[in-house]
Image (cartoon, rainbow, N blue to C red; front, side):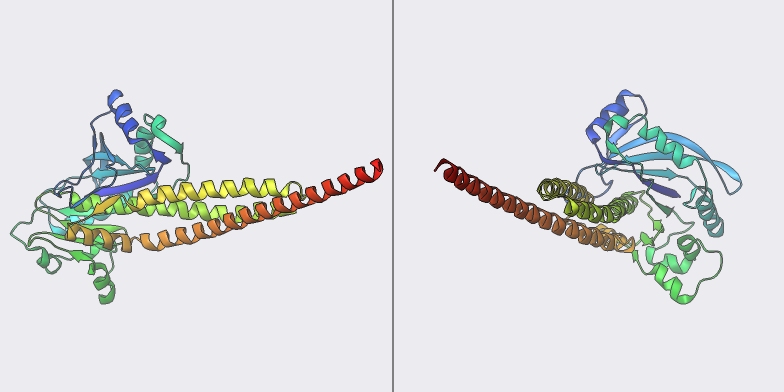
Amino acid sequence: MIALRLFDIAYSINLTKVESLWSSGSNGQVSRSRLSSTPEKALTFDVPPVLLQLEPITLFVGGSSCQATVSGRLYEFGVVAFSVRIPVTKMTWPMYCNLVNSVDQMIGPNVETNVWKELLESVTGPLNAALTRPSHSLLEEDHLIAVVQQWNRPVKGSDVPELVDLIPILSGEQRSLSESARQDLLKQRFSYYEDDLAVVTWDRAFIYEPRSDSDVTDIFEAANAQLLEFRYYDELLDDELPRMYELVNKARRATNLLAPRRFADLARKLYTLVAEVTELTEKADNVLQVTEDVYLARIYLASLKIFRVPAISAAVDRKLSIVKDTYAALYAEASGSRGELLEIAIVILIVIEIGIALIWH
């Protein structure tokens, strides 16, 4: 069982500095991430994130304690993704379903727990010097993944939904769901070999993978990282637009002599905002480069769609367009105001010159 929790911690992260700081501090292993079984030319990280091996933690799940391995992955655009892996062996399917839901109740998104806070502090503290403009947004995303590596007999991936009931794991519900709801949960399922299967939903996923490949899990994580980053900038622009309108009104209320300066200053601020948001959203948008691996590309694109990444990205683009249009209007207004002041100055100089000529005459 894998519990993912992602946080937006900074405007950007210097990954080279992360490697240096983490290695020098003797905090554990550090490496650049790559997909475990996919050739780099087929699908790879645009800028490979840094993977940190953290200290194991003890969790009390299902009435007993278990040792969980922990890792943290830092993305250049300011996101850290924690992965808590809980190994399980030799149990019935109902026991496994109950255990997965117990993990959600123990460290899930709506549970008051210090686990994630302590993990966040264990990373942001030693790596603070590598964070550019640390964030206090407290935005986060989570995903719970159930992974089966072996059944008690040979099983094809396509037979898994008929062999066991995946709905309790995919929904977290104890009550029986309607047939339409069940079909919706099972709609996004993928297989490449005969003996594998991946099913993804909004906040949970099921993976049957006998070869211990982690590529599908890494893709779910990367898609969640994109979602978190676009959510951050969507909320940032939501807060910025009303403030922008207020600043524009203040600039227009300024005296004619100060208006051009204020318009120009505000236009520069808006241009800086557009440049920053565009740079970071492009990095988030290109976190994975897909060229040849059609199977993983389908899972990746389906995950983005389920997580509503394209919709939030489009909302960010619309708000950026508003800011860009406002910047253009302010720039034109500042130029027009300067032209008016220049014309007035020329007229005054002409009047003064005529006055001096008359006085001299």
